[in-house]
Amino acid sequence: MKQERNKSKKDFNKAVSFIEDLCWLLDSQKNTNYSEVLKTISDLKEQSVKAIEPSTDDLIGILPQLLTDKALFTTNKSLAQFSDEILGIEILNWHKRSRYEMIGVIICKVQESPTIATGISKYVLTNIMLNKEQIREYQKEIEKSNNQFLWNEAIHKIVEMEKNE
Image (cartoon, rainbow, N blue to C red; front, side, top):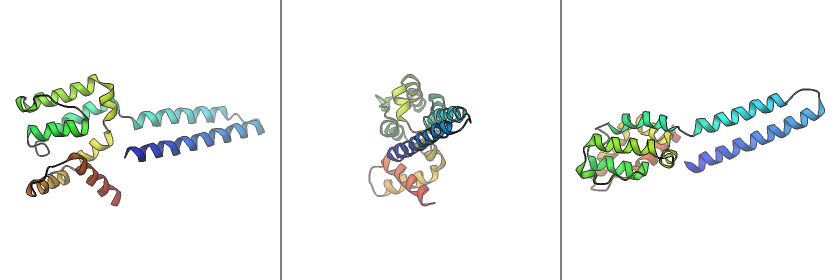
């Protein structure tokens, strides 16, 4: 997913560079003021970068809704596993904590650390929210086969389903 986003970003930057060069060329040939066009493109470029990177406030808004879902996170262990594997937040002594205390720890760590917030994909969280039922079915399948449920595999399945639609 990160490679696709980087490729899209690179393609977008190439297109912007081409348009900028074209505007300079056109500006040198006519009395038309293309500097306004360049300014508009520059503003669009800045806005698109901001739209791609989720703000901490966006994440803080999504996380409680996701983490309080008892159908998706049936145990504290499953919540701790998600936090560690997907969010990169290890919850120490999770087996001694209440569910809401764990959720509070996660939200506070996201709020406190820009590094953690930057590493969390709003795209992935949104896909989890939209596909809770499919994830829950996958969890049940894995439990029946006595294998360990891995969030990365579940997310990969969701993204593949989305591509095929």
